[in-house]
Image 1 (cartoon, rainbow, N blue to C red):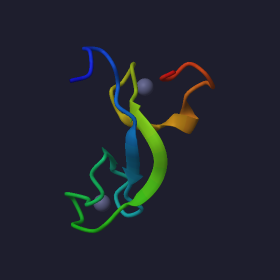
Image 2: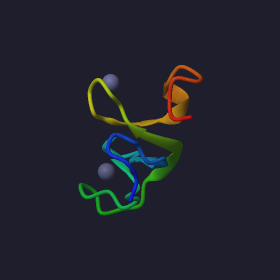
Image 3: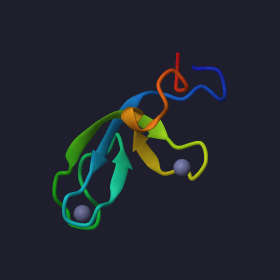
Image 4: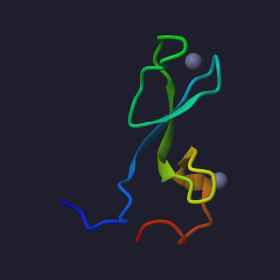
Length: 63
Ligand SMILES: [Zn+2]
Ligand SMILES: [Zn+2]
């Protein structure tokens, strides 16, 4: 089991229809369609929205 506080890197998916973002879940629950993979990411520490790792300042996320 990973130590508490360690964030797992999972794929962030974005729905092109409703702009919903999801973490590690490709099927949009709103539209019931498959979303586009935005990249590997995690939950934003400030707003807890799923964000792709490219949105973070380089080196500030993960190891
Ligand atoms: Zn959708
Ligand atoms: Zn945020």
